[in-house]
Length: 75
Image 1 (cartoon, helix red, strand yellow):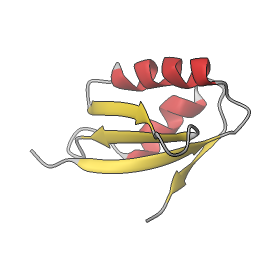
Image 2: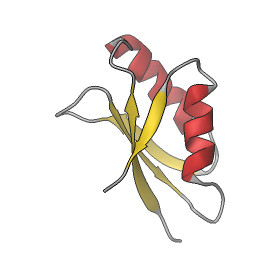
Image 3: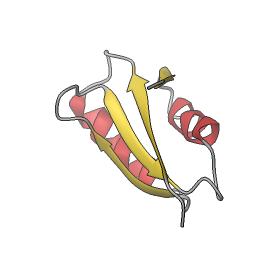
């Protein structure tokens, strides 16, 4: 299985509690393997997913569907 890691930068007004809820929402997608906030920056959401099943755009749409402004961090 191939996997892809991505980082989504979430609006800084989002609370820590809401970030944890967001982690859970992203994890419910069958194609997402993991989702967690960064220890160094609480507004970075680290997501690992199966690219044969989904895309970074889909993950971003899932986050935005929760009413949260986000963008993809390019490395």
